Length: 35
Image (cartoon, rainbow, N blue to C red):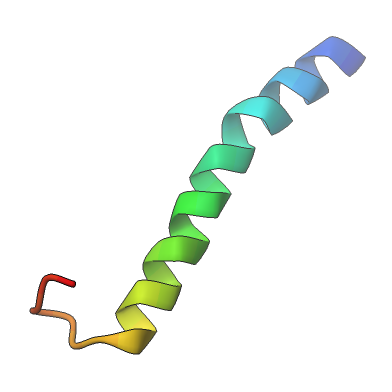
C-alpha cells in the first residue's frame, strides 16, 4: 500500500506544479494572450 501511495504522489506532484504555474500565469496576464 505504501508503494502505491508514493507512486500516486510521484505522478500527481508534477501535475499540481503545472496547475499552480498555470494559475499564476493566468493571474498575471489575460486569458487569451500568450505570455
